[in-house]
Image (tube, rainbow, N blue to C red; front, side):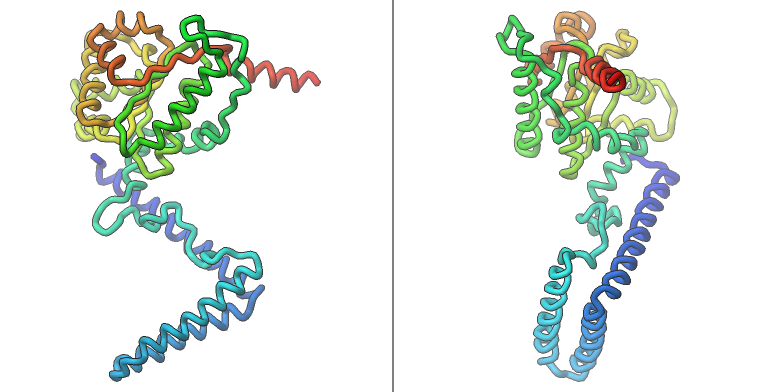
Length: 333
């Protein structure tokens, strides 16, 4: 990930702050539990004393000291766990509340950057730090089929709006489940406000939580990055550009809202084709009809998408309008 020294230091300070926060939380927990269960404080003091005593014995050549220590510590730790459980505390209550257990909030596993560090760098570089807040709301757990009708039918498939949405959610869940074993891409199209972006966010949430790198762009933001790399002179634009092709999942939202020209058309094909060659998954959402897609971005691009993407057309009433009407109805009551 191409980071300037300033950006890198920003991330390191964030990790340091998280570690200090963890230590503070842990100290508060220990003090509170010691007051509630004094025997726990005694056990920890005994464990500390035993460790020192047995270490001295080992230095003096007593090879049995380690076996003896393990036996004594095992009994004390077992008692400690029982005491915590009897008072309603989990076994790991005296462990720091790591945001990332894999690297224990250091940002590194050995000498390698942790997946959480790579995603933090992506969020910083592409100013998508608010993505986590959005995904706390827009995820599979909060997805509702209540806004899709059983009466509205797609004459081409014979499926209702509800059945179509159910199929789309099933496809997205399979996409997540097989992400590491099968190379797939998703293409959502249909009218405004029918859940295309929401579904993209649902997938992003699952993959971020499982340690994958995700970059989200509106189409206009993506083409701005591509343009900056081609014509700009920013020091780190080349690295930022490469991240588009290297991230595990690229989400391109609202395709067709950008100012289209020969540059965007050629760069769009390059972006899609390169990610396909690298077997890096992409999700695209657009309000464009398929005919418009071919007309704006060329038959070649349309052919690449239709052959390499699972294409899903969502339809129904605008969910945003439905929610607004519901809020107004509640206020009138």
